[in-house]
Length: 281
Image (tube, rainbow, N blue to C red):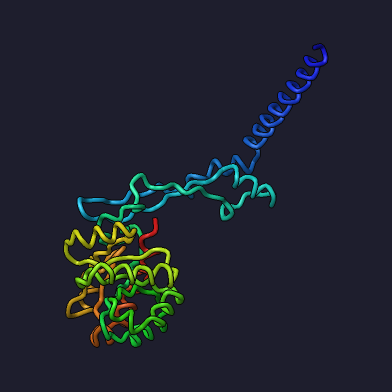
């Protein structure tokens, strides 16, 4: 019994020693010049998250915030021996209200705190998108192509190539009143064959069936806040804003004016991004 208590005492002393050592080390870190500097300046490099804006049927994504990870930053900077704000490490702060899993609402734009927009092209039946692609390639821009099942049947390889090149493919079948099997077939090609992680539906007017089917299949439904009708360049110029999702038909006027439209977007200090990036929080 005596040996038992001796061993217990030794174990207790060792545990207390570890605790004391750890606390002493933490005290030394707190008073280290690098940690003091991190604590003094961290507020300069932090950003509060922005909540998504939700109405009855629509949603605008929020934006993640971030804060300095003090301990991780300290250990990283301690290795180089001095403070450098460019090497700080951060923790992501998620919005309280987020786009995540809100498939049951129409996305009407990206967050207006982002200086970005997204171009969306509605591709139907025998539409030829080669001229559009040439312009996008020249401008080094990635876009979103919302296609119907007839176009997909005739352009399988091109669809897969578009995904591989970094464009986004969306599903137009329900917007055009095609049947459920069309939607599922296209959804399978986009996600399984094309390996696109997130897929999207398209809708310009309230349609509960579209929203329900897309939601069940975990597709976000896009309702662009700029829908081009007759005069692409003029309409974009008049309505352009941060976070805009701009929807174009495929026609000669769009092909003729697209180059100028992209230049105009850039002149406003905006970037052109695919939906995945525009809507990311």
